[in-house]
Length: 123
Image 1 (cartoon, rainbow, N blue to C red):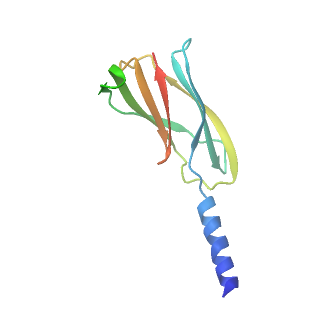
Image 2: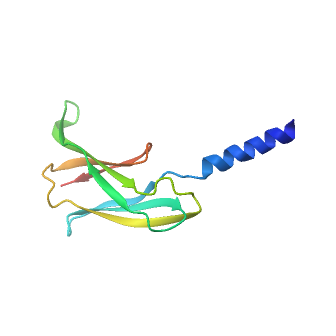
Image 3: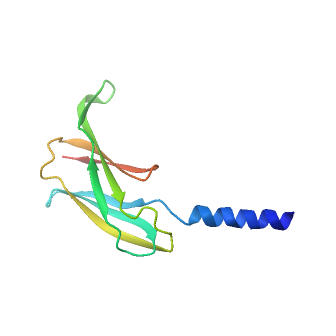
C-alpha cells in the first residue's frame, strides 16, 4: 500500500510540474523609446514562444483616499505555447510600444497566466 501511495505521489508531482505558468522578470518603462520593457520567464521545449498583447479598456479610478482621479488599464501578455512541456527555462524580452496609447498617465496592470501580474505607472 505505501509503495502505491509513493508512486501516486510521484505521478502527481510529475503531472503538476509538466507545465509551468509564465512569469514576469524585470518590468520597466523606457522613456526614450516610450515602451514598456518586460522580461518574460517561461518553461518549455523550445525558445520560440511568441507573446501576444491584449489591451483592456481604459478606466478612470476615483479614490477619495489617494487624491485625484487616475487612469488604469490592463495589459495581458499571453504565450502562444502556454501548454508546452516544462523541459527548460527560457527568457524573452517583450517590448510594448505606447505611442498610440491615449490612456495616460496611467497605472498599467500587466498579467500573464491566471495568477501572475505586476503593476507599472507610466507617464
